[in-house]
Length: 451
Image (cartoon, rainbow, N blue to C red):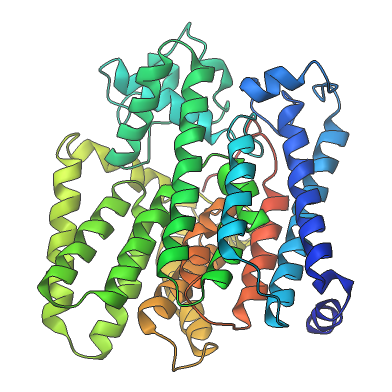
């Protein structure tokens, strides 16, 4: 792989014009799949731009092979285009990051009006928002229970209809806000969610442009990253909001000192956990360099403020909002290595009960994550800011060894990597993100595997 990468790095792909063209081709293929919805890779709906384009483009509703071929080709071209742009940058290409951000904003504006591609998560978001807007509790009531005879339930993935929300209170408020606008129309609710997600994505790009030591690199890694645009924007995932709060916390940790900085970091981490609990990875990453410097009081201050913020957020729904997280922590899916571990122990010759396998995986995967994080951490120069390197190492290790992982989970690793100077981990994060994207490119209607 290293030999292939070295050859490609000095090929025509590293020409900025070629790299941008390849990136654009990848995004275009993904956009076409969303434009020709519904199909096997999209939700069974049409957002406004998809509805408009149906008069000019054929439907892929009964063309499963063609739809998935376009998705796979788009993922691979996006990977090659991103790699080409990064190689061009390392060889002296210095584009105006403001222009890159402006172009990305235009692409995002188109993507948010096309039917989501690659996942049915936005349908679940809309359903939870509708439940909350009707006065229900999405942490105790599933779409199948609360949304019978509505146009919300049919578009939720069949596996997820009986599932309650595993997202934090802030995620629920975002979903409820969208549903309060959409009302009985699930399509409008999803469109609002897509728009909010797109605004958050570009907002992070603007923040990185203004606060990064290398704004060009940061923009290429985030706002102009075709792989992330496909996964976060085209898919409409909440991980964009988690990444937004976490990069704010990282930048504050690097620039603001004293009690004021610690309080602000704690609040931001708490808010991020209020979207998805996985933001705790960044919290641990930020605490690591402080612990190594024996700054116990700072760690305590940040921890207390974070916990208070999380407690306040969850007080609106009570302890019941945490129960789905416990159930969700027992899920496993390929290509996680733990799925193979589970299959091995399921062999009748071992006679190991399923509950024992669950316990073993629950105990072993966090240890494996720490080991992987340490390995990644050691591969980055020691003179780099630990407030960035540690969160990146931990979030990257998480998507490598977690039992339940999807390509959009890589948002945390990518947003932290925007602040880390050139290193060899970039290529592996790119390749693994695209591997996950190719593996999980369906519309979310198929079966999932749990422990």
